[in-house]
Length: 288
Ligand SMILES: NC(=O)c1ccc[n+]([C@@H]2O[C@H](COP(=O)([O-])OP(=O)(O)OC[C@H]3O[C@@H](n4cnc5c(N)ncnc54)[C@H](OP(=O)(O)O)[C@@H]3O)[C@@H](O)[C@H]2O)c1
Image (tube, rainbow, N blue to C red):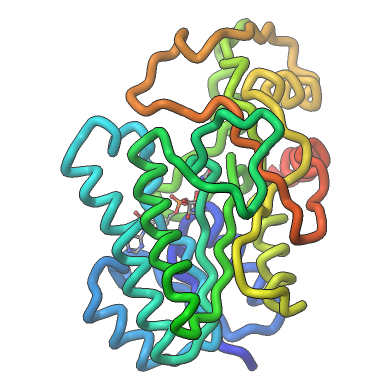
């Protein structure tokens, strides 16, 4: 049986990864912050060396985009988790010769390319969260020459069953459903075009990437069909047959500390295309 270590195992994506790898006969070691703080270099090196997993999947991350934009201490923490700690995982993976899988984001791109970004496009983040995720990417890519076996998966706008961690961010669709309970009208930003991604589909694609031995490198794994938040909300309430007015507004209507890319469509040119997000959303709504 293959041993796999999943970090961030109680997060939104982590929970799906644990489920799917267990269902496929892996011996899954599932750690979250309670078991290990990934910013503790000594501990991470020792504990990974003790268990010697064949594969390490890092789904742990700092994801509070606005908080780390305006608070210097939060930014330092985000940089440690999303940047430096990835370097510790690289070293630990190299020592035990494990495959390292790590997730990044469309927010590493500036958002000025309407036709979308392919895996080889040059990142240029416009917010601090994006900077921290790019720092993590660099830790991995710069270790290619040292013999690291790696998959760097960029994804965006995750949705799916909520993670088990109390801090796991509720997805956009769950937020919309909750907001709609007591309202007859919702204002939703009709901008920031990118791709929604169902965590269950992403976890399956991660399994396939590993099992089918795709070449090591960068992958863009998202559900097909990019849209704005407004378009997604309209589709959601149409599927739910909920009678509610959705009003499109500009991003300036809801000022937020961190800038968001206007167009951050990830183009998947190296892996088979995942299904359209509408199909995935339909499935999610049926299991909710
Ligand atoms: N969510 C999105 O829309 C989105 C979009 C693009 C890319 N991504 C990327 O996709 C990946 C998965 O995201 P997600 O939404 O599933 O994240 P999530 O739900 O926020 O889960 C992250 C997990 O990491 C854990 N964690 C945080 N700091 C840690 C530390 N220092 N040591 C150990 N564990 C730590 C958290 O534990 P605590 O709860 O205890 O803090 C949490 O369980 C991340 O790399 C993220 O950047 C996400």
